[in-house]
Length: 128
Image (cartoon, rainbow, N blue to C red; front, side, top):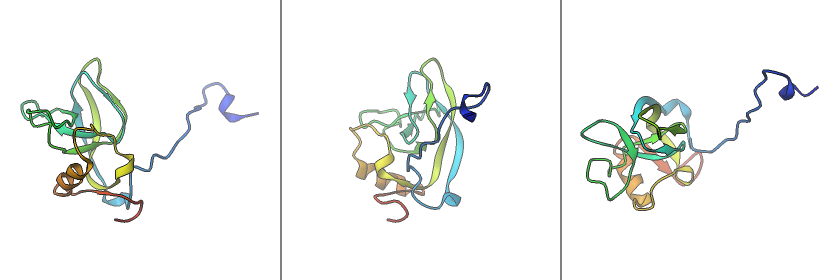
């Protein structure tokens, strides 16, 4: 009998997304508040709204502080109905091809800004 068909058994499957590009021991994640009105995927580049301290999708047209890339969302998070607790990466090495970001913010800008915050974005897995 297939174990996944038994009552009460989990049927979800782990699918690697290759977001983490190097040694996982160097990663630092912390709890954040994702501002309401958005549903974002793991790997999304976030900016921090200065007035509230909450995080939103980083866009270049913003003028509230969130125009500056700050962290990478560590998990899918649905805050469409209200603010939501989430985890974000504040340090580590990540695969640029696995990031989710607004097209108004060039990837090179994201790389340059996050480098100063101990977040490295690389083009290959396991190296620079």
